[in-house]
Image (cartoon, rainbow, N blue to C red; front, side, top):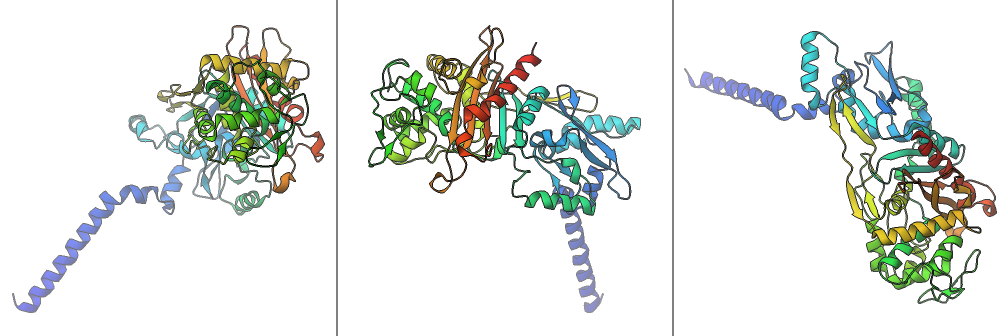
Length: 490
């Protein structure tokens, strides 16, 4: 072979080698990345080529699929009462993708999860069409309805938990949206989604999980817990040696109270009428370091709380003395999601043991075989059982005693006892914005068990700030949610 031909042969050989290397690289190294690439239209065609599996509440599907025409996406998602369930399910849209459970459990719902390989292989052999699996939630339909209807046209959120297991029973957020309105790929679907994204009221924001608020006076139960756990107070019925007004440490600023007799008030009385002075002083005496420690035992400062949807981090920060005093009454730098404050109430109801909140009970194949089940998991012993029982006494005084701020949450049913705490959180520059109305609570049955703990926040319950209070706006919603859970267990 002469020299020019040899060079051409070597060059062609190198080209073939490069082609083989590239082909193998694509097939074996980049295959998974290309398969899951959002720009790979074949992936989307496959995802929407069969009916999607369902999300289940109380044994019934709250989702469905409908056949579409005029597109190579054969099926699109539907929801039953989409506005009520959107904060739980998220959306699955042919045009913008998926969020929350629809996204996190997409493999099960589409039938593409590796754990369904045997089921899919068997279906292929028998000629049966591939079907998606189902996601069985912990939600209580009656509680979710009570929460959603209780919020009505107000802006706010509700989170309800089973204190014993951590199972989430309700997760409502308003205003909301119907995911069915942009589940397809049409121009109208695109326009609807764009309008929702630009809406100033943020209907697509899950306020129960992803919005943090100043917790206001509901945080006083955490401050009381810290004071009891650190021996700052001897008991809940002894005078606290608190002046009224109370001068914030290191400042000339006097803190006052909205109502009630708070000078030297006992811990029980201070929680009952919500004394700012008592809890600000207690927070200062506990110290910022110990307050952070106590708050973290309840779940604060946890950046990776997945239920499985990730919740925003609730924060109790490092602060100077005057800010720490204000943190102790929920009006400093600390912020909380409604889920977090439901966790606080749940831990107290569960004799101090905080269970990790979760929303998915089981993942099932299309033939109802269980692929995965959730086991309740303890997060921490937030307080000792003795301290938890003292906090229960105090919270029950708030609801049941004359003059308590939480009377609107009382359930007049035999054997049912409610404990709670109101909160009216100021916010905005110089507190000019309308306050947030808060209420946290739990219900106990005659056998001492607690089937539900609730947190409610209402952002804009009234144009008249004088009419906004946790006891007036949020407590009735919490009551209806607790009643729904109790009635569903009968």
